[in-house]
Figure 1: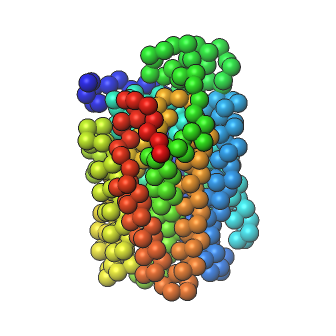
Figure 2: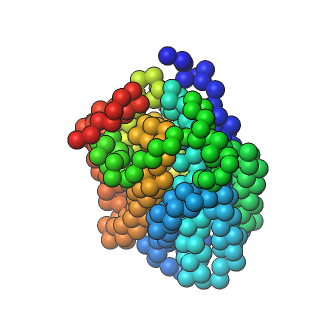
Length: 416
């Protein structure tokens, strides 16, 4: 068997990694400012965290539409248009005069985000070589994580120019990402619209890393696969914690418990990204060598323990250290989830399968900030983060109960 590190990766992977880096860099700058900007309008903690939920809600609603657009127009067009929608809504958010305007604009951006996320995920799964799916997943995650590491650090500088400045910066990075990916994928057969000459050439090119199979997996077939069912539950918990509660509640914790501003919150979120960066590449190699299951179980366990420890941190420095550990747990779990999706699809088309995966993550990202924010107002930080830890622990159990998904590439789908 060819070593995963020696497998040549398709150029589409590198294009999406570059685009992901630009998106994450800008989001890392704006993320700490989102709930704190909402608080500037005199709203409650629940309302401030609901801004994150509004974005996730519209991603959730927009995912089925995104799957249809990918099937109709191809990944390149869907990705580019989606990013430009997010860019426009973000740029206008810098001019928001009240909370309702800000809420609507963030929600509109969620539709565009669903489009480019589903397109990128579908294309990555389609072109990933069987022997290097973990490596591709970690490389893709690394592009986002490097941006996530540098973004909050840069955000601390940008925030000096005012609470609206991060939104302008994010607008510029999104335009850059759309430009990079649109140019890089203009010759891609795998990313072309179905029915086009390039797509037909891709479909007839058996054995090509970028050539997708003519077969399509529908959602009903995927749901019969136990690893896919565990993936959906795990994606829900991961979205709740990492894309929801972490972004919405940690900056509020910094402001309330440690009297920190957006700059301090940015540094704390950067600690999480640093923990990611340490293990993201080893995690990809371990996924290809020893399997997805061990990394997913350990990663979810580390995340659960970290979220229990976050509200108990006695100082900002201890909180930052806990966030480093949480980031390491995320690095262990996240590439495995993406690799499992590629294992389930087994190089087949599956827009609805990818959309359902994205939707469950977004459902967690939507409910997490809203429910945890309400619990925060009623019972405090301990209960808000404790609920999140329980959900992550249940995701760990879900992975313990199914076989490793790598065997799906070697034979018929294992269903029950």
